[in-house]
Image (cartoon, rainbow, N blue to C red):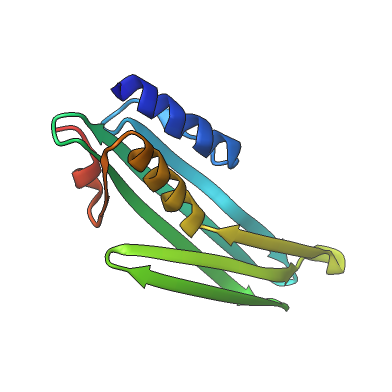
Length: 142
């Protein structure tokens, strides 16, 4: 059953454009640049990483997530963010416009909360518990 669940999560993350990888300490990991924009005298980067562990013994899927946002210099544009927290699960939606080089507009819109919702629905479908964890080690095989 584990390989089937891991494959299903992998395919969903891949269809979201997150370029997941298999193996290592976790069953699946993601290290993705959601935005890397430069313009004028400024730049903005948004990175997302996660680790997914399917633990058959505990009957659970463990998910670690981290988002990093960096802005440098002076730039034009607008952005908005909404977030909602339910227990340990943070749903975050980031969107905005960054004015890049030569006045080119770069629109971005990421519903980061959709990732955990998708993994949680797969857990429920396979009658597994879903747990978000604060430390990456908690989503790694022991």
